[in-house]
Length: 160
Image (cartoon, helix red, strand yellow):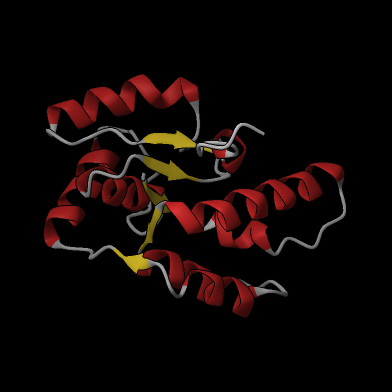
């Protein structure tokens, strides 16, 4: 069983309504991964995800919030806020203390195996992984695998 931090883009894409092929694909992959993983893995999130969803202006906002309501929330402590400051000072993440830096800090501090996201610019970005690993090493934090739902589909024990 893996511990997986669910970032804001996951409940958003679960209910994506745009019909462009890549949006439809992301919605289908998100649903396939979430529905299967929710049965076998420990999915966690944070109040930051709920707050981002609450601020959102999209058709299925309430559905997205309900989808993750049952996930265990990781507490945001002063230690987490210090990690966020370090990430921003070291130019690891954008200078938004309630955004990507906070999600990465939570997943790292609480030892999550994965941080699942569709944010491929700042989080699930192979070009940033070495920098993230270096900074987390300095801070003595674990380094979660930063992945999209597509990368986790079929992660279970089935042979389909």
